[in-house]
Amino acid sequence: MVSAYAVLIGLVVVERLAELVVARRNLAWARSKGGIEYGRRHYPWIVAAHVALLAAAPAEVWLLGRPFLPALGWPMLAVVVLSQGLRWWCIGTLGRRWNTRVVVVPGMPLVATGPYRWLRHPNYVAVVAEGLALPLVHTAWITALAFTAANAILLTVRVRVENAALACCGP
Image (cartoon, rainbow, N blue to C red; front, side, top):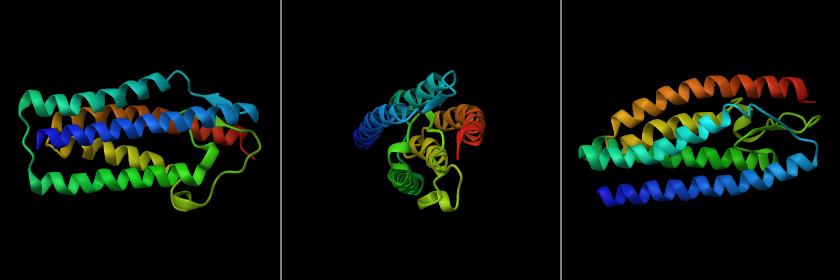
């Protein structure tokens, strides 16, 4: 089961790289429209936390011999898959406006369709769910706890920056 977990982590890495391709393209578009980036100081910490998650989870499984427990692993895998679905729903809903960075194109209205009808920051729901569930697919509970704690701090900063950016430079 450890090799299947490595494949899962590899698939998430590929997904993250696809996100970065989309984000880079969208950043160029936003800048061409006068987009302004906010929160540059916290962004490297977010990247570091996500890289650490993707490295630490399989390392914990391998180094500490964490077992796959079907009663935990299968539901957590379902949460990972659902979180990916929510993330890509957010990306599709925001279109060119989606980014891994906080970039606001002045004068553009807030998006109120897709998951944004119900939640102001649905992508962060996906991040929280995946960050907890991905390590727990193979009982890497130390990684799940550490990432969740770090992510809570980072998202507190991130949401504050994003809300301020949207309030100052929205429509």
